[in-house]
Amino acid sequence: MKTYQYLFGLALSTIFICSSCSKDFLTLYPEGNLNEGTFYKTEADFQQAVIGAYVPMRDIANNAFWMDEMRSDNATYDYYEKDRGSAARENISTFMDDATNGVTVIRYQANFTGIARTNAILDHIESASISDSMENQVIGEAKALRGHYYFDLVKTFGGVPLQLHEILKLDDAYLPRATADEVYTQIISDLKDALNRLPAPKFTAAETGRINKGVVATELAAVYMQKKDYASAIPLLQSVTAMGYNLMPNFKDIFNPANKNANANKELIFDVQYQSGTTGQSSSFIYRFIPNTPNTTLFLGVNFNVNGFGGWDVPTDNLIALFETGDTRLDASVGVAEGSLNASQDFIASKLVSAVGYVAPAGVKAKYFCKKFYYPPYPNLNQNTDQNWTLYRYADVLLMLAECLNETNKPGEALPYVNQVRTRAFGNNTRNITTSDQVGLRNAIAQERRVELAFENKRWHDLIRTGQAITIMNAYGITAKAKFPIYYPNHLTLLKTN
Image 1 (tube, rainbow, N blue to C red):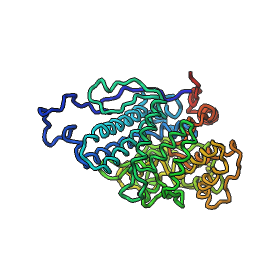
Image 2: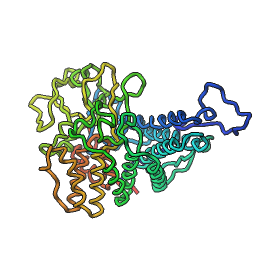
Image 3: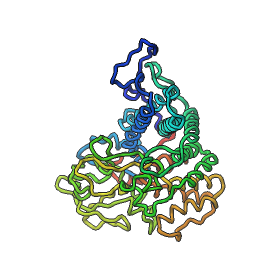
Image 4: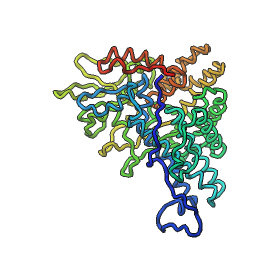
């Protein structure tokens, strides 16, 4: 199978190259400059360093949907013939990308930037004079973040170099590639240590976005599931169900930026945090997801020429057909814009309609788009939103636990967890799953994960994790190539390799 096994040399921008001179009484540090001699001294220094270690998560989230959702049968792209400048992103979706793909490089480098920042924290904290409680918190968050970054790397690229200390000289930057098993061993070690150090979730606005015991237990369980060690994941997931998380009553409210704080939304476990404004911390996902159009007023409330920028993460017919009658998640996840093509063949939207039971009228051009993160109107400030990106939420935990119980021959114990998710989706328990057959329930849980977590960057990794990527994507490719002339014969084809 063609997988991401590309390795890139560590760019200087992703590591800290510090002087290797000895620190004796002759070493002088310029006053007013931040460096290893004047920083990493106080609790405020370490708090600032930890916050900085979260930042690369944004670079990953800003690009992950191309690699994690659009490589799957959930999402495709709106082919824009007039501007072929985005072909590199299309290549990821069609399995035609290579080691020079810019999106892939950004993700690789961002992960190692985060790892470098956590390594610096961990190497300096032992010699710092800070309280035991602060040391526990800082070490816990740093190790959880390092485990998180390495988990993203190993899932995406396979074995990678294990950088576990601050880089003090250039030679330290060039380590051999570790095996995937070695990387997983380190991830598990880091997350176990973090789990013992960090507090339970407090659900306060001040704690929003910070890693806690719930985050670590969830991610460690996901690591075990990736290794098919379902038995080890079960107690971790069960512990999360006792930490105070719950499902939002209305599915659409989960992703509303107005509900992004932990005290307003106890379904959120771990989000990448964004903030609109002029500080450079804003997000722009919806600009990528609405259809290509020269006038965005209908969608955004303001006009931003999105041609060549939007049209990504487009829901596939394959996904839309999976939503059952009465499932409220369809209307919350998938939008439809009706309109027409102008003389320049640009799409001009005239109205937005529901995807529920939708069939395009004759003579109408209809475009589907990812609606899950769509909360208009938007400010008159281009590509600048408050939208966070969710990494883990409680519905995911319930479905993970259901899968683990079923895979350890406990289908009866799995049913209540998957049915909690379905009861929310349908508004009652009349559509609950009742089968106790392990294979049938495995398929039902997989379908439930697909519709519940659509566009949340889970589908591709689920296909890889369960060994279905080749079979499902090749079958999807045959159908897609027969329907859409934009695809070439070698597009959307996964080949098994030795």
